[in-house]
Amino acid sequence: MQKSITRIVIMALIVGSPHVGLAQSGGQTLPAEPALSHAAVKRAGSLLSLDEAIRTGVATHPLIERSRYRALIAKALTRQTQGERYPWLEASLAGSIGSLRIVTTDGKAIHDRGGHGFDPGGALAKHNQNMLSGGFMLNQLISDFGYTAHRILATEANEAASEKEVLTHKAFVILNVQKTYLNCLLQKSLITIAAETLRQRQAVRDQVQALYRHQLKSKVDLDLMLVEVSNAELSLIKARNDLKQSFAALNNAMGIEGPDQYELEQIPIQVTPSQAIETLVATGLSDRPELLGNRDRLVASEELLKAVKALNFGSLSAVGSIGMTKYGDVHDGGIPPDGVAPFWGFGATMKLPLFTGFRIQNQIKEASHRKGEMEEELQSLANEIVLQIVRAYLTKTTNAEQIALEQDRVTFSKEALLLAQERYRLGLSPIVEVVRATAVLFESESRLAEARYIYKTSELVVAYATGQEYKRF
Image (cartoon, rainbow, N blue to C red; front, side, top):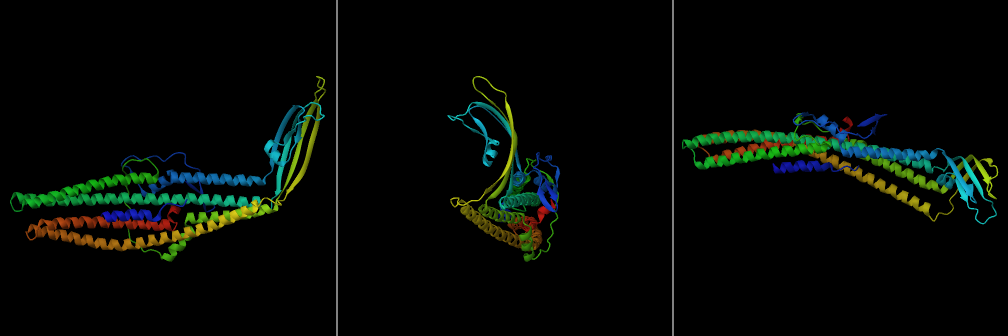
């Protein structure tokens, strides 16, 4: 039994960790706004269906919530980059008194300081003056020869990759909920088996005790059965404790602090034929969300490479300004009447990098290496997905065969127990045979229950590995 439980743990580790409320839009699943409150927690002993447990996990698990925020961050970054296409309009107001003069500045200073600067008069032959100037400055990028356009495409690809990350975490959470839910059902089955074993051993103990009182059986037989009853009681206690731990794991998989027990629906377990391994691999390589996300990241790296190459061609921008300046001279302690002068103008700026200390060249090399890194990461992930599918397929096939063998073993164990009990009653065999037959039956029924639920888990792992199960929720 311990080995079988170990196999369950190994099955849980086959998939491993992921590499990284949904709304439908044009056939593409997009991340919804993060949930602000968790679903209502059920009371202890209330019915919890598998689909309800999965929906709770999808709605409240922190792993999905975190990836949804990341998707929203990526969306905001895309909008920021797209904003570079639009005009930059600023209003400015500047005032001075004394020998300082308000002057207009270049395009960078327009962006940094609102379109105005100050020229210190110092020892120049300028009389003191007070000035107040205000206006509007418009800066429009005409062309940077693809630099901004490719950066926008890169951020859009990263945004799409973030949406796939939400689906990746969603699929992983669904699988964990399914496995923990099935494990709870398995532990409940083991409790039933342990309780039935205890009942059978108590019945044999009562028979031996009656025979011992009539001096038909020895005290050794009675003591041996008392020990076996105690062992059965210990197994039942352990099974109940394992069930409580399984419920705690189920709450953790759903991302909630729920009660320590639920009423669970029974999941039908039927052995069904599997698709061909080639079909499963092809499906996984086309539908796994983390693989789709890495393909989007590869597109982003390609667009960034094109963007940095476009830096070699410079940029062309237009600037326009309009406003009004109010001024007045200050001398001999008097202020003459103020003057008002409107101003306006427009121009263009063409920038062409001639020598940048090899900065652009090294930016191109960096982007090229990042693209190569992403290509290798994509290939590595594809190989890992193929391995996951093959493992899940073989595990399912093996467990399907094991169920049939365990069913035969249970049948033989029941017959052996009946025979041992009858032989013992007739005095043809010692009590040890009955004890051994009872232990074998308990182990056989436990292994059958484990094999059935491991098979069902392997079915779900195949669905996860091929990227299918999360589409239902």
